[in-house]
Length: 219
Ligand code: ADP
Ligand code: MG
Image 1 (cartoon, rainbow, N blue to C red):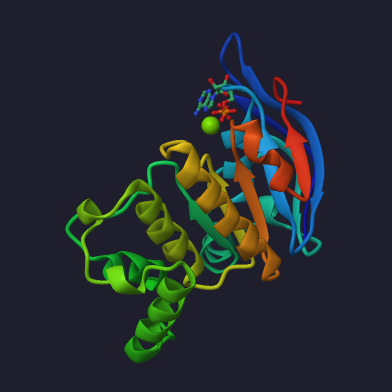
Image 2: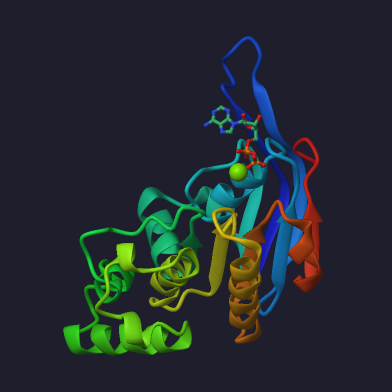
């Protein structure tokens, strides 16, 4: 489904000392896989995820989605890729405090002009049920635990039904019991046929992965 070929990323290329964050990465990911990306701080994990998610472009190499090179996409094609194919989950949840859980999840559908309001409400309710937050739909983020906040963030990423879910240290702000819960939820999502790619610095959860990628100094 997603293949990257010889990806490099150089920050500050015109600087006297450019920083080679990725040094020629080759990977192939398929639907239904649960990929864990491990590596020390600064090894290039977020750089790789940002390229896969279409937030940033590689300096060289190809990112192929079903055989099409997204690194050559125009701005509009890239925006569509991010909107339709990718759900992204952040370590710090990125929820809007003044909105309810329901409204936060609905933000995931904000760009979907062709879906009616009724259908959007139905999609939000369906996904809240799947992540176990139906009872909390009207609560504000401040009324939730860390694990519940991360479930909201996962629901927001999933509500538009992307093929690929990408999470950058989704358990970084959670205690170990809650982390297991969230990793189990992400695994379950992969088993429903999506490609789930998770960066975790916690090797404890890597055994749950179908495939482990370890980055060392951009390699
Ligand atoms: P990780 O997520 O594994 O901690 P990153 O991908 O964030 O690693 O960073 C990899 C390397 O690239 C680090 O040396 C980091 O300092 C550098 N880096 C990351 N983002 C930028 C940027 N926007 N500009 C310059 N250097 C960066
Ligand atoms: Mg990082």
